[in-house]
Image (cartoon, rainbow over all chains, first blue to last red; front, side):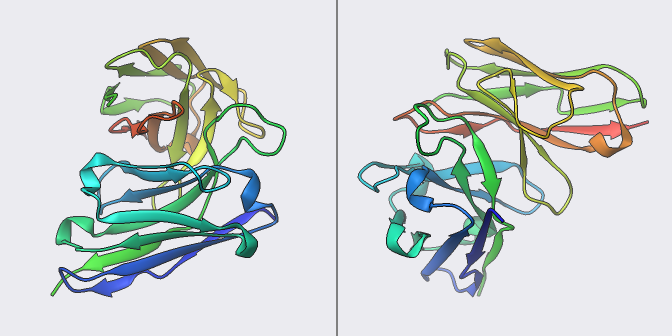
Length: 124
Length: 108
């Protein structure tokens, strides 16, 4: 079964750090661009970052001001998001997702598999 | 960065109605546009990619159209199961990605 499972969320104090993980099963993570997205309570979806299949190319949202860093460990079929200098505005459900373009595909096509999300709460 | 503006923000319609949601981009994104459905408390689900290609398993009452800066998601016959918030999203390579602000669909 194709699946993504996030972990690492929780309660953290302002200024703190947190590392989120996303483990893939049922497919080779190394075949897909991977993405992080978040959703603050009652708000819309916000794209955070994506990373190429090899990890050589990454792009983060400007709004993050360099505080977050995406990485991947293809050997462990996992995606990571290191978050630092957290503020209350970072409180959200964090989702990982894969782009549907896999092995043999030549162009990105949208996020076809999503994790269930992990909640991050930044509060003193 | 591209800005995506969806309209309307909320849509109320009856079962069986044909409804459309518009997504306008601040500059051309060619056809690098997807549509997602998100039900309360759930992760989003991909409906349409490349502006008009239906994702496998998505009912044929959903369709997408457009290119460049104006896109439309249409539900040909609204069903109770379609109550959700719908988002457009652009995904150009080597550029930041963006979501629209969402359109909430309610059934009268």
